[in-house]
Length: 633
Image 1 (tube, rainbow, N blue to C red):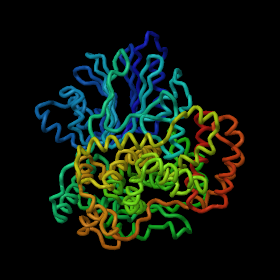
Image 2 (image 1 turned 180 degrees about the vertical axis):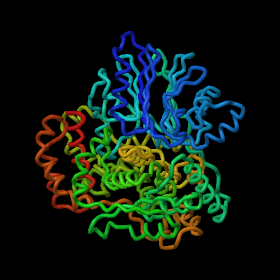
Image 3 (image 1 turned 45 degrees about the horizontal axis):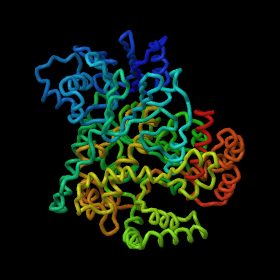
Image 4 (image 1 turned 180 degrees about the horizontal axis):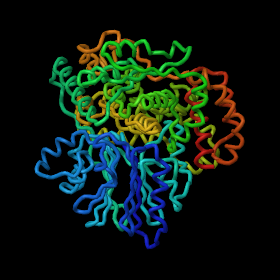
């Protein structure tokens, strides 16, 4: 786990102090690599910077930027879990200068060029300068575990692990991208390639790019989910495939020259990871859990402790107080330079801090399982409603539009209206993580100026792109069901832009590496290929995964109701957030010119009276105002 920075100047204008600029970029994200740092340049137009968190090959031979014998240079963030297999397969007779994965990656690129990506199992973002071709080659891993941002302005291509490092460059302009803001209001995070800044972008997962003296030469996908036909497999066969596949994924992620720990909630996913880790580790696995002081309805420590005791882990708990959350609120926009309004970042921040304090640098989590196996209970509502939705779609579209328009006059904020609106617009029913403001709601409180800038935007365009990819990937197969679409958009959209972004930034804030076995790409292919009838059965989410784990986890862990990482945010910090919003709303609306103050105040009044369901909207408004003040104003 590291931080990477760099730029390639192919303009006719000389950049003074290029090496100093790389140092500034490195210093801005120093926490990503506290163990070592380095820089390299070719004395002309290419400048690289690197920050190292030592996980594999702790010796100085793992220093980066790393220069190959043929002159290629790499900066690399992440881990290649199968690097030893690659060495044995392709470079058995080669005399390596190091024992880590970076040199292996360099050699693999030298041998296969961009096709090297097909051989990698890992999480990564890297850039390689090829002096023979005078080209820069960049890539991001399949699941989007490692971040990679880039900008092309004034004839200079710049890249980094974080936005804030790119903003250190003097020619980079901090201009708001209104399209990104519009979509953020719907999803509370951003789809690639958008960031909140115009002309600064983020890589899609599973994409690579080549940059030469003419600019970006190509940018393309190198992988998508590969579906196998598992329809003939019995339940017992599927159970065995899933268990052995997950075990292999965990074993890969135990590869480290430092001890590996785990975040343990006591739920199915993290408990399964801990069980498999404990069977492989030669030491008691350190596990970490979060609780909330005097808030028993949010407390899952009993279940986490039960699992920790069963597998003999070295267990640690962090109890968060109201003061902890209040103290954390001002920090959130420092961490998320690309905005993400997610209240569950609070416990992850503190559990990461606890891990680092106890000497754990690498942790495994259960992230990704719910998206692969249909694990969310609120997804069940969509599965039940899909037949009605399809029946409604059979009505003539003009009639659907009339019904939607009539209902809008009575209540344009309810889920029922949103369903009618989507059907009238021929939109997909399930949007994944669109849990903030609906189209009709946000159109009421954005200003006329913003509406003019946004033009004909509709946040469904994000979903539509993924739907097209899904239909292309189906290749005409008729055995796919609604749950297959839900899992696909969960994996392609929610996981990289929400869970992986959150995990990377919160883990790196405390210089720890977070690994996610469920998102091993081979396991992902397997899980996504499981027929839908085995993912949700008799109202039980993640049915086949739970059945596969019955040999290692108890029934009360496997089949208790899922809670997730809930936070008493409204109870502990709601008044503080509302007070901040009310005091600063006029200044925010005046300076941004993008929001209707009176409508927002009406919304805040409803929030003050409201229920827990409005917490996400309050958090989104609070976060957005704080983010503007930090990064735009």
